[in-house]
Image (tube, rainbow over the protein chains, first blue to last red):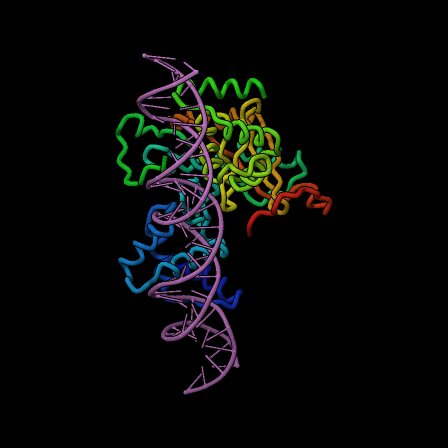
Length: 154
Length: 154
DNA sequence: TTTGATAATGATAACCGTTATCATTATTGT
DNA sequence: ACAATAATGATAACGGTTATCATTATCAAA
């Protein structure tokens, strides 16, 4: 946490931006909460800590955090963008449950290697990739699912 | 083409829906054109063949075609959904050029096998998956790119 | 062929997540 | 403390998608 703030302040100095209490609050809430929040979900949590912070500030701060490399934007085509913290986390792909909306993070060096090979074969220069596998998670198959995530649209 | 129409009519009979001239026109334009069209792009092409067809009909027909399994919805987070014909095409993933917007279709049985293994390991039941690799295509690296696709936003 | 039930259409309003605007406030280097 | 200007909050605007609704067209059954 301390390092996170420090690293962000460093980025801010480099870019001639400014560190504010709002940004502090928003980052705290992001770190305190489950991943893959929408702007609106984060806004509600931020409001509980400081009701004076507006929606636009949360949205802008998320953009700022993506630019800084602190967050990733995840689009699972459910109507709005989601954000997850990447600092301190390995790269990973997602299993996404269409019943409960849960994200399961997966990583396979094997997979990454084959992807890299395909990219090379096409003379492509990769910047990012995303692999999303949709289906039903093991808990939902057994009707044991307890997540509070909203199910995905449709 | 003849089979496509027949297969769609079969689906329509099963579901107690109705085959219309508009649907015929829209399917013709979809088959006649490069893949990965947005609703608006398809609407413009349809209008040239029959200016009386409305935007809503194109949008609804695309949903219908997705439900029928004729089309896939592709979301590359550029602001609007795109649609590609799947009947008569193998499953594939995408290399997407961030400079010219070009889609390169890739398929690797090796990759699919590893994905299936990961899914199995998590007790997940997969319905679909999408792998998108973003970067710069070989033509754009050489400034030789001639595609007319709009570059992606941002 | 005619008919009746109802699916489909076209025009457009509504919706919703995101972004832009703008006057005001707060931060930061000097 | 000051000046330059980045950031904020409220809200309007934007753009893609979906809903509404009166009208038309389809198609199975008579």
